[in-house]
Length: 354
Image 1: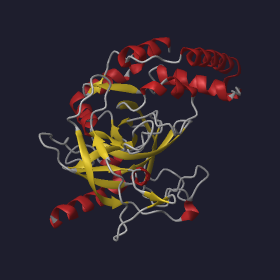
Image 2 (image 1 turned 135 degrees about the vertical axis):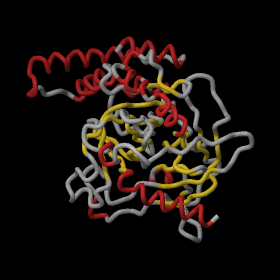
Image 3 (image 1 turned 30 degrees about the vertical axis):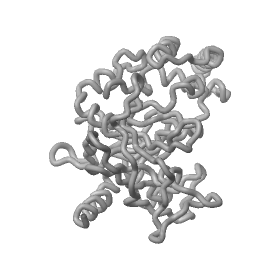
């Protein structure tokens, strides 16, 4: 863990809270000792849980890796065995990293952004419905809509496809010009104890405007002309990686580890893991549309709208649209196995109408 913290300071040029680090390490040591003594019967305090999770995040099992020059930094101490797995499909991973952007909102203080998105059409990105609402104008807390019922965006909303550690760049930034699609709200009776409604399609498609001299990233694939079927790649235990911008102040995790990295939030990062439940694997009563998959990649607030991508086939085929996470490492995504045809229909209909 000390090596990881030193690496973060070195690569970002920002100081980590060493007092918080010391407390976290003490909690980690206490948690590990209790687990060693009591095994599965160990009862951990909240602080010990935070320490234990931090150890997991830095031991290479579920790291959060910086994207540097369009790929992961293989020198990051926590990369572990994922370095080799990601390197095998480096061109595919690079394509994903290039296609993932940050949904910038000048009015979102102090971070300046609301979530993540990725390219699915030549000038179209997909993100979450709740991210769309975050970048829309409000009146008395309610989203303002135009005469067609489409959310009205705030001024200055743009997508930045860079925001990596290292020198800043301004040549990968495009304005959002139009809301193409907003997923429907689900039946309130499906609202669960986590305040999530899996009957809601937490998806939105946004059109980007061109910028002189700049070329938009290529869209990601969410269907395969050849190779294993998408349902096989989306099955339980399959390796995945998630690319996005973790670190929103309204993080979904209470983990003390996130506080140590408060100074480095908002950068593009890659988090590997695996699928926990395949589409349709949740109880039918909680996932009536059977369009949810779960994964264990490490996420924070700000990752909403991230691409969940296969890891071991080509490193670039998109399997899910991440929309929520839970501090015990269960994260939810809409499976492209289920929503891909609808995205295709929207993109095809738009191209035919132009």
